[in-house]
Length: 262
Image 1: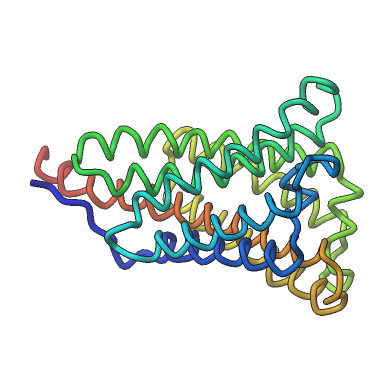
Image 2: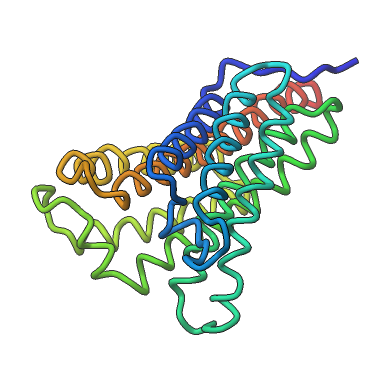
């Protein structure tokens, strides 16, 4: 039997650890990552729900890190992140011409894709893993298009997050980032240089955490928004890393088959 294996790829560990970070932040503040996990303030027992979500994220994140429970943990995280993504759908339907809600939906859905691609990659059958990984990676590619569109529609807002000390300027890097997102999405959706593009995309998202979110947290360590933003940033990096690992694993497996065909 072709049994699932957790390889030396780091994506699965980053994805699992990021869920633990989200859970710890949620428990520490007794709140959701409110700008991303859109749970209304008037929801009954909101604090208790936030604490339950925090425990859920920590438990499932820990499960992802353990070989025997990794697949179940990834699926359970995907389910939770899908719930949070779904909470944005009302805003999308109510104001379809305002892209901010679309952008938030796809940010959350990228975390769903990360969990699903891990679930698929740890499956029993090689043919099933390959087919499902290809489908989910393309779902993630659609999310990357949205990342680029956010920078296009809200260029000045995105530019304000770029550190001023990085030359040649904030607007330049906000626009360049949009282009990089579109290029990565095109590669992932087409399969042309998808392995390289997914790795570079992951590196770029990690740089967002290092250059933007971590310094903001250091400057304002008492703000829940900064902790939540860092947690979501790390989670998005984990999802991108998991997708990149899966795409590159498919490429490696396909190489021997292509050689044999020759």
